[in-house]
Amino acid sequence: MSAHYTPQPRKPLPEGFLTALRSLFGDRLQMGEAIRLQHGSSEAHFRPSLPDAVVFPLSTEEVVALVKLCSAAQVPVIPFGAGTSIEGNTIPVRGGVTVDLSRMDAILEVHAEDFDCTVQAGVRREQLNEHLRDMGLFFPIDPGANATLGGMAATRASGTNAVRYGTMREAILSLRVVTPDGKDIRTSRRARKSAAGYDLTRLMIGSEGTLGIITEVTLRLHGIPEAISSAVCSFETLEGAVDTVVQAIQIGVPLARVEILDDTQMRAVNRWSRLDYPELTTLFFEFHGSHTYVEEQVRTVEEIAGMNGGGQFRWSNLPEERSKLWKARHEAYYAAVNMRPGAVGWATDVCVPISRLAQCIIETKQDLETSSVPGTILGHVGDGNFHVVFSVDPTVPEEMVEVEAINERLVRRALAMDGTCTGEHGIGLGKQDWLVEELGDAVRMMRLIKQAIDPHDLFNPGKIFVREG
Ligand SMILES: Cc1cc2nc3c(=O)[nH]c(=O)nc-3n(C[C@H](O)[C@H](O)[C@H](O)COP(=O)(O)OP(=O)(O)OC[C@H]3O[C@@H](n4cnc5c(N)ncnc54)[C@H](O)[C@@H]3O)c2cc1C
Image (cartoon, rainbow, N blue to C red; front, top):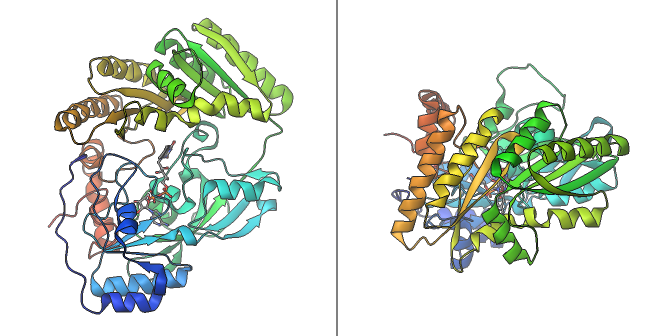
């Protein structure tokens, strides 16, 4: 299923539909080949499938009107944020209308005293953090890409800060959602906790556009820490690096970020970003807290690293030095993809209990050593979450088969350790078989929920699972 998803039958748009759509959106309805290709392709290896049209709403009211129109005409609706998802999540496999929320980018309210804010779904995380900086606040979830908050909610994204601050699941207080029957609902109030009925907020988080269009997101915020330090350390062995992280967490060091890059990945970043790091498995750390507490954390982790074969522990609390130290990590994905000219990325994403992480990564590394397709390991090791990024040529079927087989072994390995087939990228098109293997009959309940909320299967059809019958 993953690489070569089965195209689904498309129906021609009903007569009069486009005229009605044009009267709602004017020139914010776009049908040119380039814009449809941009919204029908993805960051990864999936074959494109174009929407019939792309619209750019400006308000929740416009989204309601659009949903009512599409529902009456039985036309699929595909929500779209920044298009950075990597499991083919936004590809309109049955055509229809892609709803690009990027122009709904207003920061509506910041309640500094309550540490929360409400934003339109198209606000990007960097934009939000720039807005918050002068108030001494920040929003910690960082999936690397400059994604929208709506897209991050819909994929239950996380990233480098999750080890300390959690994922989108913990970060969201409430959502405003337009449902497939055209209702404009709020899933919760702004209160920090609530026991009021079913938890619709969490039902929507990670629903990948299949249950509704998120138009507003209310988020928890954090105070910018008094001190931040970054550190980088290379290790003689993969095992030594992973053991360092596990031991640091086990003794209670509150790591804010800890990322692993294997030797192949370090070679790729040195080439791509013109750096000169040792080409060994490397850990990138960030520590938050008061000046003395941060220094204490740095010293503790340096000592643990030393006991596990870590080399020089380079650290700094100066912003420009910190950016330099993290440069390799920030450019890692594109460095890996571009190991071969003209290749595309195929990024896997498993997560296992932290006590099983070393074994899972080491077995995966052994598997990669026999692969003819270059692949690197990088990950958010503090959560037990890591990726293999392959630099694959999708026009060579043997390569796709080989990567699929490695991916399969990796997912089976993670599931056997009571892990998951996706820590953060979602199911999209790529992980559908694995969802069933992981959760069995629980997927039946997901299907019943989908059937109840979107009976005509119009919202991002073909994602998470293909509707039966
Ligand atoms: C270089 C790189 C690094 C990455 N690193 C990470 C990482 O560390 N952690 C991580 O979690 N992810 C990572 N990702 C994946 C990606 O950034 C996340 O999946 C992100 O959350 C997607 O947000 P987006 O705005 O781009 O959403 P899109 O890609 O546009 O959409 C993603 C899904 O959400 C749905 N959707 C979008 N907006 C809405 C909405 N308003 N309402 C309802 N449904 C909606 C879409 O239909 C689709 O199913 C990375 C991607 C890249 C390219």
